[in-house]
Amino acid sequence: MSEGPSLSDFMRHLQAILEESEEIGDSLERETRQLQIESAIQEAIIFGNRYRELVDQGIDPLHFVNPATREELPQHVSKLETLSIGNALCSGCGARLENDLDFCASCGEKR
Image (cartoon, rainbow, N blue to C red; front, side, top):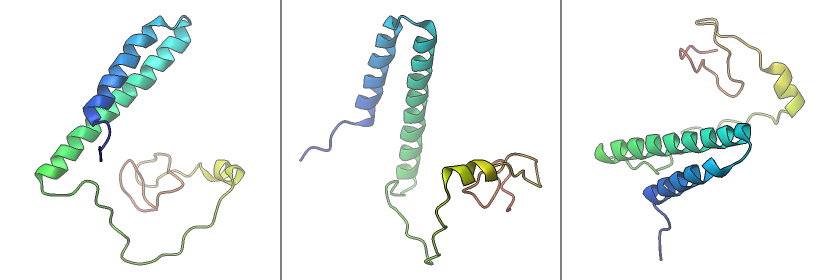
């Protein structure tokens, strides 16, 4: 059974699409598409480097860890509620807090 395409196959595919994007007539659409593809290439490089780093340290990068305790899942929040709640600022650094995190993504301070 084949494992499918590799990360380098995916990156070659992205490079080919990037070259093809030069043919997009509308300059704004071309620039937008190229930015998307370049971002995907950067993420693939970051993933590949991180994966190799974990393997070199003897860590299985694809091993999923189950939580030690079974906490109750948060209640479903509608899109409207999500839009109305998302304006909290961190007391430590003043950055905008993400709704789904219980700490500041910028400085790490707990909510």
